Amino acid sequence: MSLLSLDRIGLTLGDTPVLDDITLHVNAGEFVSILGPSGAGKSTLFRILTGALSPDRGTVHLNDAPLTTSSRAFAYLPQRDALLPWRRIIDNTTLGLEVQGMTRKDARARVAPLLGEFGLDGFARHYPAQLSGGMRQRAALLRTVVQDRPIQLLDEPFGALDALTRMTLQRWLETRWQTARWTTLLITHDVREAVALSDRIYVLSRRPARVIAEFTVTAPRPRLGRALPPDAVVQEADLLNTLLTQTGETQ
Amino acid sequence: MAYPSGPWADRARAALPALLSILAALALWEGYVHLSGISPLVLPAPSRVADQMAQNRALLWANTLPTLTATLSGFACSLSVAFLLSVLIDFAPRLRRALFPVFVISQTLPLVAIAPLVVLWFGFGLTPKILLVALVTFFPMLIALVDGYDSTEPEIMALLASLGASRARIFRTARLPSALPFFFAGLRISITYAVVAAIFAEYVGARSGLGIVILNAKNSFRPDLMLAAVVISSALTLCLFAATALIQAVVLRWRAP
Image (cartoon, rainbow over all chains, first blue to last red; front, side, top):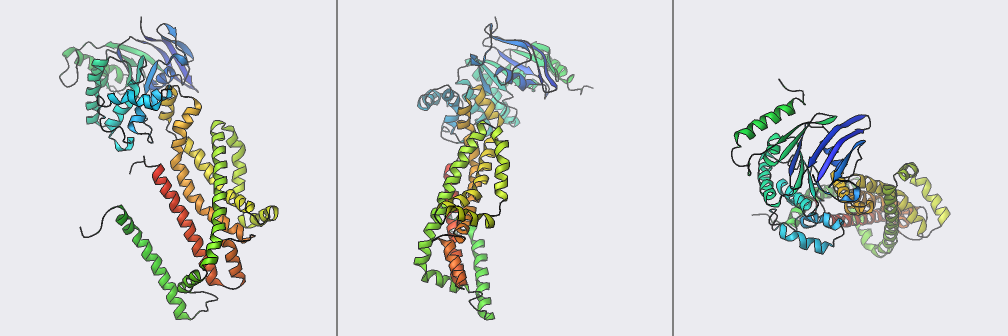
């Protein structure tokens, strides 16, 4: 039984068919990536999961029960960090808890011990504008994981960062994930990132999106910071080729 | 370091060019008046204006207070109404289409023609001044707030929606703070209009106020006293402008330096 399953999801926005036929599932404790060309409708899929959009066709099930807006199943990290510039870092990380009705004091007490783990020690009282891009993203991740929702939705969380910061954060996330095993659904268009972090990868076609391939990555973890085993390298090349057929830029 | 440093010294150095150009203009003016022998009934020298300010300080002070009262109460009224309406418009966007054309038209009415009518309808008391200050400042503040709410980052909206936040919660947590920089931009412009509107309202009919000092001085051919009152009204505007800038610096301290 899978924790989350999407069955034949289809959606047309205005006159544009965005999602054609999306069927996928996520098991508890699994890290699943959705890989697709830009503009494929990956973020739209997340908007369906968070309840901002309703699909025209298809069903979403959580623990074999239909997903409702009151399921509160997802902790969502948007493409940019979406930190509130007028809130201090500590109060940004507690935002989810506060919206759920926890008092600010309790929420702070809950989050404060985690700051160190997220590399934010000593920055609790800073404003987001005073932090580097990598730190902001870690604060946003902390805000996401403290909500204790069953599934994390990460929408290209490293897309806006410079290459070096991105690599540091990917390594950090891999380490953190290995201990915590958050059930995670990651959107990315970075093949290397998908192979490094995922248990399974779905590849989407260009718009209107269908699932055109599914890969299971078996390479042992940690995968970052050392050479990938040969079969994972082959997989990476396969994935890239599959993805390139969708951009119309194959030779 | 040969120069004093620190925020205040930096600020003083930044203000120096402006101070020098103002001083140069005053010196030219003073020189022209003395060399041309022009009558002080036409163009009084800056020194004479300063002299008038000193001599009439009691009169000027007594008339500055009513102007300040009119400005602040008119501005407070227009701010509260603008805020309430902006919230309503944010929650019911259709109101915007119904109301904005009316407000745009209100901004096209020439103050020169409207002010005497408002005084005719509401008398010489505080009411017509409040109304005229509000007429001038209300719409810019409303626009600043409504546009400010709309400037909220879509990603922040999506995040809060995913957290299960209610519409009211989203407004309080994200849309209202997002509007603050717009609000202060509007505030700094409107406060200068507010003083001008208050003085003009007094000019067309009042018992006291800087507008009345200017009117009386004009009628008794006293350009030196007129200019003295003008200097005071400028200084008043500058003080209010500085006060808003100060409040902004405190409230928006989260912005990148």
